[in-house]
Image (cartoon, rainbow, N blue to C red; front, side, top):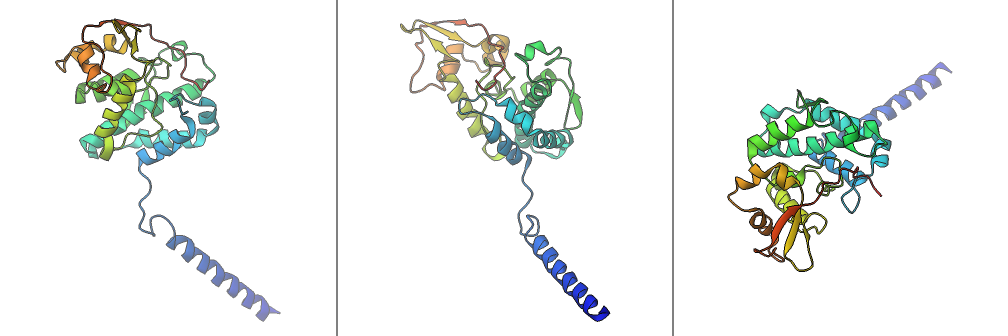
Length: 254
């Protein structure tokens, strides 16, 4: 009896050993596959919560709170000092958009981020080890460092007046192409750039007023800046420009 029991235990032990070897051998690391990068993980999450029209399904994001929490932890511990310039730029863009989603999910349901006191200028978030407000993240880590107005079309502040959110993260290797593509999409969006039927007046987002210095630094007028991304359908050079009122309604899925 003892002999049979010992034999069975040995067989079970061998089976477990074989299974362990199989699992280890087929793990991503042992199979020669590196763990997914942060931007790849963010893309996987965005594909689940960003709608076809660039809004956010905050109910779905809240249901997947565990994934969102894990991504925020990676944002908090990211080593920005060891990253290249494109890696840092992509990281801070993704960190901003992801942090906005997390902050909204934490307060959801809410009609507008403007109903949340200090949403942009008081509430601190740990970004790559630094406590930063959303304004500090935008101004100190992106605007001042890169002087690239295209970031204003990539950052999505949780409002319908914002540019539409891409269902993918910004990646270091494709960052410049993504930013240019995003600028083209936003500046050709008739909800973002509104042209009257006669083509004599163009209403633009207040983003062009709030960040006027950034766009002027390019040496182009507002119309000229926009037209470089509207080559197929440029705005009339003689058109007058004005601003429509920014829509602070939450960019929630309708």
